[in-house]
Image 1 (spheres, rainbow, N blue to C red):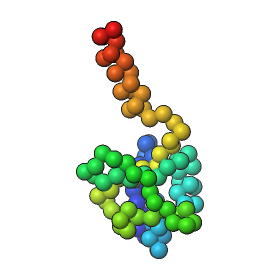
Image 2 (cartoon, one colour; image 1 turned 30 degrees about the vertical axis):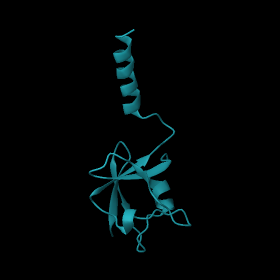
Image 3 (cartoon, rainbow, N blue to C red; image 1 turned 180 degrees about the horizontal axis):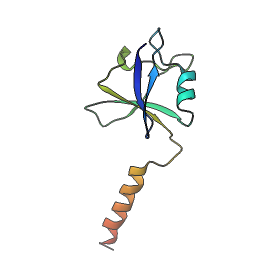
Image 4 (cartoon, rainbow, N blue to C red; image 1 turned 90 degrees about the vertical axis):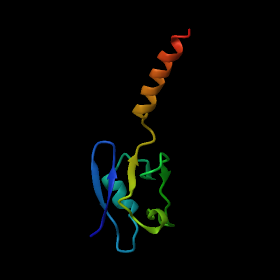
Length: 99
């Protein structure tokens, strides 16, 4: 059985690839119940991209291949991202020095 390693922010979890090459939405939801988005980015990129789905809502491999050179992330878009709140605090401190 082939798996894809998916980071949920706390753990890296192996999610099985179905024989037809998809990741089942049902399996994804069972393993990542609070995730609202499944994202990927290539190792040399800083851009996260939402995974494409088929007509059943199952996830398709980026460019037709599940690769170890790609990072996969289960993300809860409803919760604030820690980095953005930290950087806004930093910017607030930066701007307050000019105040």
